[in-house]
Length: 602
Image (cartoon, rainbow, N blue to C red; front, side, top):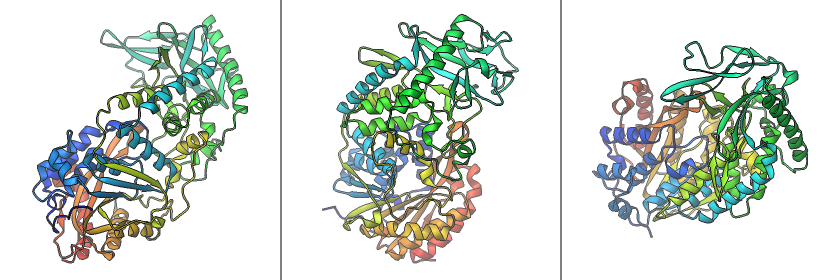
């Protein structure tokens, strides 16, 4: 049985000062902005909260008022023993678990936590991340490495010739059949060197290139002389590596050199071989749905998600999943889903950084004029160890998983369980001390569109990929529709909260509609006896240009069950996050006024 909760108004989460909120928000953002903490970097997910922020908020929900230093320490590592003591015997419900951060962080604090989500991609991601976080991963890591070796043995002939293997192939869409002269950049003795295609078609290195821009100047290509890697896309340059030494070099495929001619012919023949192999694979291709985020693919004539990758890439990815046994099949599928961002024609070579970047920016799918074909299995395979080559391939994700697993020295003190299902239809006892609710937003776009790469990877592995049927908040355009859709599951989670239990409601704040939606959720909470007691601004992360993270405002509303009549504690965004967020003060003030009427005071 859980220990009693502190009296109303006397938990640390209800009494956080603006300074403590600022420190927790900014430290979490600085620590995790643009990257993920620990195990959350193993598998790509379209949206994740800062783990340290979530950990601090959960810890503060069971700590007594005044324990702000412990809250901040809990957000860092190692976690203080006093926090473990306060969390012992507590239960947490992660109502819309997504990739599982809240449930996993609660377990790290010592909670017994339950995460529920309606989408298989979320469920598999959360469950796999928990296995990694709980150190139950050695056999899985070994299984993934064996699958990678097996896949490479089968797919090597599609990428290697004359002792050299392909890492990247740069391509151009025809028409217009043009490409930037820029091919690569590297540092030599502290100086940046640019590899560009010269007038004779050969690659030359320039020490200075002041007039060089990401996409210009450009050269015209003759597609009649170039190998086609996918319908309408032709290869004009390739990066290869020597299998013995690992030495890497670029080859211009428009050059008249004999090695360029050999490589052109090999790419052409291997594309034909990959097509033959693909025709022998029973691959359940996921159709591209009509939607706001997929319209560019449909306009380009791409009706199947499998068509965003070349046949060489698909066969290589399939061989990896096929070689994975039941022990690591889920992890293999999630790695393929992660790798599909860059191991497909969605990827392009971003010239200023000289690195491959995914062309999928959270939710919009588009294939650039000059995509890159990355070999998803590229690496040096020696003695059971793989050194990945290229960025974003399967080999890199497998090595990352193995490293994260080997660094897992102590399992969490608590336990997490994840369920795939519609929360409104799951039996829950009224036994949870904390409910974390981070529901989808009424954005108008379909969340299911964000997970098309996961759907394709799960289908490739023979795993369930369609969401559970239920009141799925997907593509709902008005706040009224949204509230009606989310109500059954939200009410179910609130009814599972014990007396004096804490609700942590997390919601992105961007405009009037988000204020209206959050106020609607707070009204539902009040109708079940959960009154709002605090409203704080935090930072979340939204994708910026080229997939880089940028900050966005996240409202955290705290509620306590059976705690009416309390004054609502409100912290203004500008007092926490600085003058750049002063424009949000009015939104928060509007929201606070609405919430105050629900708390029992005005």
